[in-house]
Length: 83
Image (tube, rainbow, N blue to C red; front, top):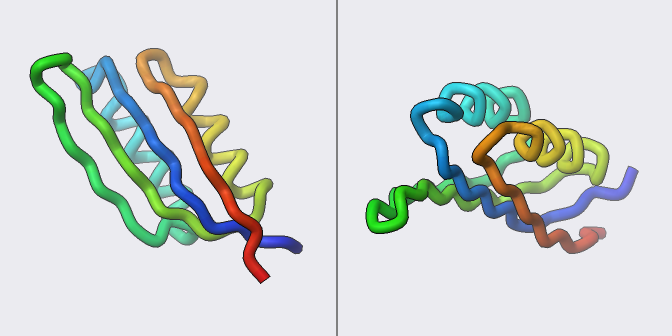
C-alpha cells in the first residue's frame, strides 16, 4: 500500500472542551506521527498543533476525519507520496 509523508495543521478554538478528545485521537494514531509541536496563541485564543506524519492515505484520512468532526477544531493537510 502506498505511504505518504506530510504535515497536518490543527487549529483549536475551544481548547478546554476539545483538548482531551484531540489528544485521545492523536494517541490512537501515534504510530503514524513522526513529530508534533503545539503552540498557544493567546491574542486570538487559539492553540495550534503541527504534526509530521507518515502513513497510508487511509490512516491519515481516518485521523484527520476524526479530528475534523470535533467542534472548534480545524484540520488541513499536505501530503507527498513516498517510494
